[in-house]
Length: 288
Image (cartoon, rainbow, N blue to C red; front, side, top):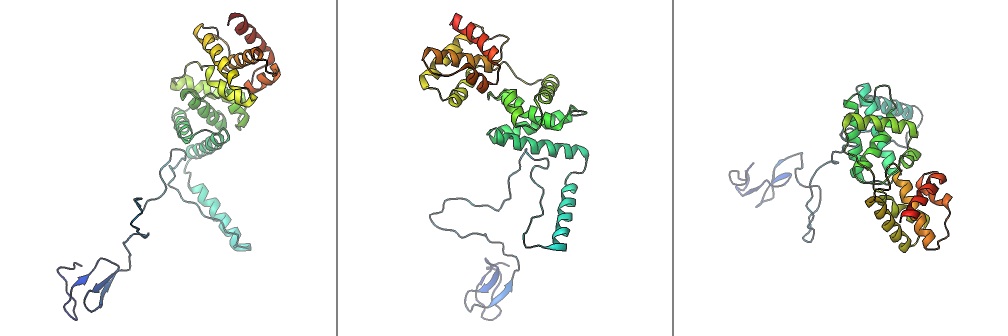
């Protein structure tokens, strides 16, 4: 109804149809009423510069249905028979969200990835990329006969590798539901079949985190970074674990700075054996 073409049937006054009720501006007669309020659901203020919009939650790659599904809520007020009925409805509703075994596997994998990313304190970007990588592995039929949790952990580890984030296999496996062997098998399959752009890890990526866990001084970390740079430039780290090289550089710098730290403590932080640390330390110490 337009305010220009319509007039009030009582006083022939102008009609205002901008709100839920169509009202005469002269006598106040309610000419018509719309049951749907198409106006905003918020109040506007002059100093409020935020642009509001009626939208739901954003789509996300970390869920098998992109976050479009709904869930039946829970209530502590329900008792007895009604409570059991709602529990059955929730169970059937959850089953209906995954129409095939492939969807169920993807849902299990994405849940594990979200949990693992949270445990490792990684970003949502790593979470979403890991979910996309897991989905690519599933489309390539790499999960057949293998552990879903192993591939979820491998997707997180591979995403960290390609994103330049220093995380060892042992660190990821410690928080994952899969063991280190399952993670390595899944990672090898993903790397081989999907051709991930993964290169050797720079030992310097581990230094800040290891130094923080060992509570070392800033000058010790700075000296360890100089040693690691020398090792990388002279190609002395070939065939050695990058975390072990970083640990050896930190231990060398700590010894030079008279910092009381043992080989066992440094090796435990880096996730390597003390013997590996000693052999790498001897090479770094003799060549640096």
